[in-house]
Length: 393
Image (cartoon, rainbow, N blue to C red; front, top):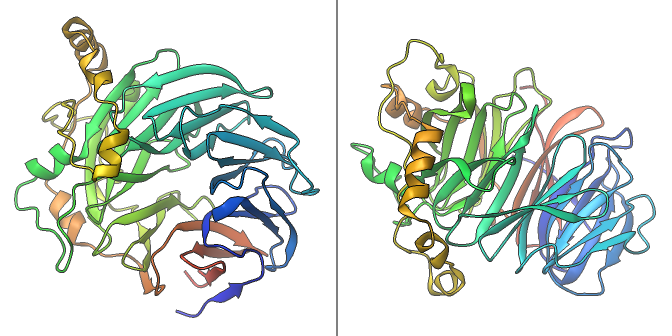
């Protein structure tokens, strides 16, 4: 599939891309060694900045409430930039992370910033100012991705290299429910990994929430994208997966500008990029009422299977500190249940509406409208961005 190249914005590999919802439609990209670049919709570089820290820029998000605010993470810090005048940080949120930050997320009003880092902690900061409002400690390894639920400003989803996806209600510091992707994979009968795929545990890399707020997608190292449906009372009603990639799936992002909210873009270490229509997937179509409910959401924490580097950064003592009484209270309070419908295997076999080989390991996929045209902006191991048109879908 043909792509347009956006060049001369970086000298190092691009790690993240963010799109503004403002009238100017700006894009921002961050790369290794602290480079931040702002682009217009034609792919022209408007401004570039090298952050003084020189740390890799791992996440870039525009404020939905103030297009003149861009948040970028680098090392343990978050810098607040003005993308229209990229001359330096407007504000520095020092120590936003306990260790290197991997992911940022803003709520719909731009009043809260979620920060996920290598220590296994998710922090929620009040904006403006950056005061820490909540510190969420339940992951036992690196937290790789975090996202707010649209329409529900107090709900947050996190995913990490402990193979767990958690839904949080920010009134409390313990998750509403936890889904263990490793246990899901082990318990699914007849689950076969895609031909040619390395046998990898489902380390969770990227989580996204559809604009309806009820459907979640999580890209994982097992090459699949795990799907979850949240029902009434924020319970986990349904889960399943799609076979997305022959190697680890690194990216999963819902598109907000197509006719329904269940279009999903994915990217992987196999160099493939895919676009999925999930509107008929059993996880999406299941009705909340009249469905039998099966096993409870998986809550046991897995044995560490991450690589040595990841194991050295794990925080297993957090799990040990939980008391038996607290766990029992959570089980009763959450009452989360999962219904794996008979259509799960069929969903796994159904393919994407569109897929193509990008040719290089995918670092980021950013769905956006460029001059009114649905597009995917893809970052890889190079300093350039590739833009693919989705016109005609």
